[in-house]
Length: 403
Image (cartoon, rainbow, N blue to C red; front, side, top):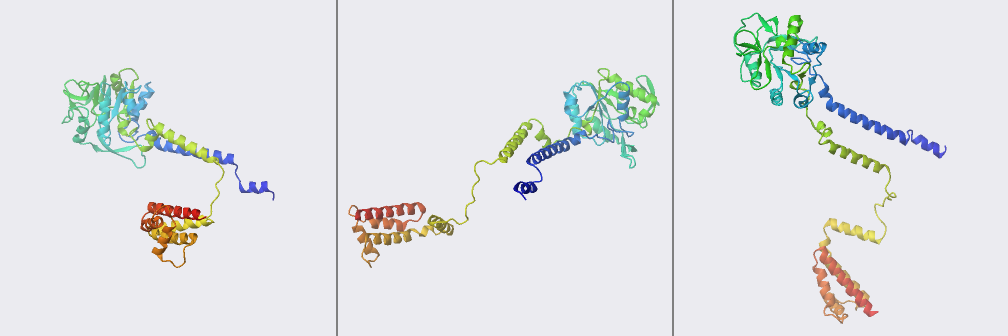
């Protein structure tokens, strides 16, 4: 088999194919990350008293009814739509559910200051049906204390106590049957009354806020009656700042309220940091595709030569902690070497040999003895290095003088 054929057999994919495969994988990973990050924002909050619920306490019917009659009725999914968006001047219909977040309602009240807003109070406790999750079963009416807690976030008043005294309610010229277990508040100037001083629709003082105390006038259960459906449409139309300027709130039901680290990474102001990190990673990857300089040869585990032997011995002595004990031994070794090089008589003891070596130095008294003592007393690397250098220099000079 030839060399090109063998190379082809070892590489089943070309480099170009591998490159585009890596690019496709990175793009797929980025798309998955973005979709998983923003997927909760696109989920429709359904069930309960929400504008998208098809159950009896929901309001999907009035939304569809408005759309069929020429009013788009968009959904507010974030704080920008509520306060500063292009739809912020619309009449915002806030449908309160028993499981809504009170802090979110306070935020809506604050953001909607001086903007027309209709608050629809909760009334019924319901459970979803097992066979039809978009339908629900009415359990009982919510206690007045629960409804009053929600009402207190909007206006300082409470639900009225007592049964209704009227059988029908005038809703913008439509006489409709009063809902079962009617909810009302005391108001001398009601927009929709259920008897003397009993308001079903009331306006808050000093703010363009409206409170619909009984949701059974506009929810899905109410729209099964044509007169109530027409009355609900006229009720909303009477509060619109302009024809067709109506939107429903979804933030109270969880839309646009999910914050996490992933969103911070892909939204300003941290988006610039994320892009910078990705650009740096891409440059590092491109830099790693090519070799910088010639390949470095792998060195031997144990080098050859005397220098390698000396380095290895020094390393072993350093790891063993014996360097501080080498000064006196090195001094004795240098004494023997100097005696051999300078031709000292055989058999001289240590001090006699030192005096003989001192006598070889005519320019300095006790030249060798002083250096020998410094090397013998050295206890750290700096002192030993200096003393060894002086002993070596002294021996070299005496040997040169002798030659």
